[in-house]
Length: 108
Image 1 (cartoon, helix red, strand yellow):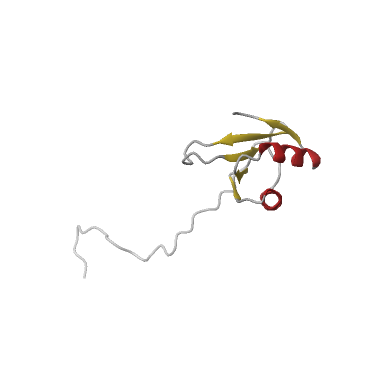
Image 2: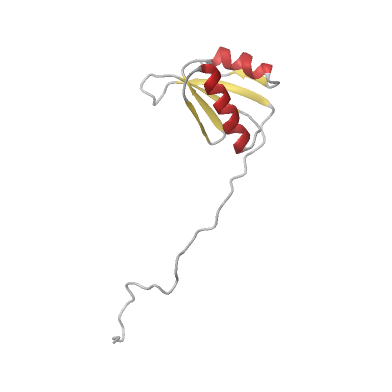
């Protein structure tokens, strides 16, 4: 029973709506890996941010796991940036240079 002039409140006519997957494309870097130290927004605790690695997601996660084991601390990968807990910039620089990367210390 439908009334004329009524508005549709609910319908199962469309089925499940699945959005299209958008694969983000990363911009190519200049070939220099930069290691930053950041404390802002982390309650004074510092982290080392590694940016500029031209690796795919799988290789980036593998490198992050390797760095976490070598440093003996935690970390994560967020948007093509590896975060390592603590100020380990000097160790990370020598380790990445040993793996063949060009590394610069950036920031304070």
